[in-house]
Length: 56
Image 1 (cartoon, rainbow, N blue to C red):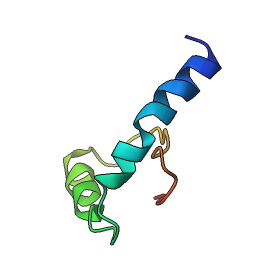
Image 2 (tube, rainbow, N blue to C red):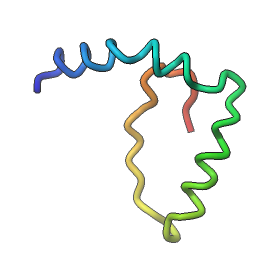
Image 3 (tube, rainbow, N blue to C red):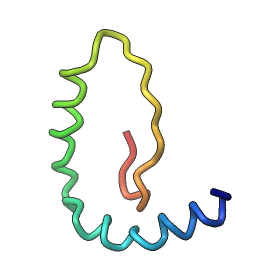
């Protein structure tokens, strides 16, 4: 899959993805739950969040 195909795929779902996110950022609790499950000093790859509304 080339970059343009990837871009088109993300563009196709970005609006739906953004509409289902909590605008107040309360999904931070989900991140806390994830962090609780990880081992100490985990290696984490940040792949972005589609709409760019929030970053860690």
